[in-house]
Length: 172
Image (cartoon, rainbow, N blue to C red; front, side, top):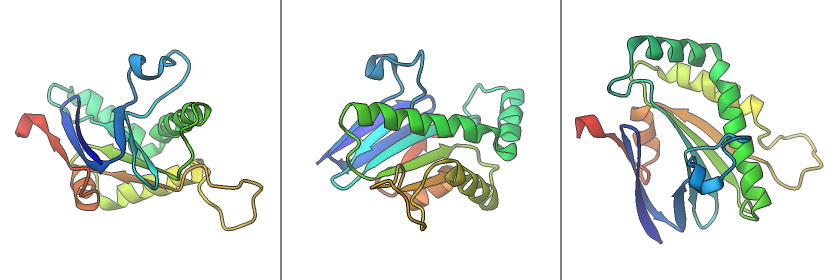
């Protein structure tokens, strides 16, 4: 088991005790950025994969207008479409590469301090409806496409993902 540290803009994630982890959203990683969306990181654990996406509208230097536009897109659900395709395209790439043989958990960090727990819950529920999570009714699929999906802000991320702590570089 290994530990990894990655930087994404103003955020640093420490990934502890995993089989493998890599920054996926780079042209050198998958080479299909011209036709596929990608999550920022993929973490392989012994029993599952974690697809991790960061959104940081509150990054230092971000203009207030950018932050306001992001909040509007987030609250309206418009951002869900982008998040849905990032997960689906990444799954397709990993499946075609022969690496999607474990359950997948999709974790989204929206590093915006003004987001409330209820807003995060609404986005989580809405995104779960857009992704084909395990359903209770019979399905011809042998396994779910995505086992779970959760949207966090920085505080809730660090509360629920103790082995994946994220910190802001500008305040470290």
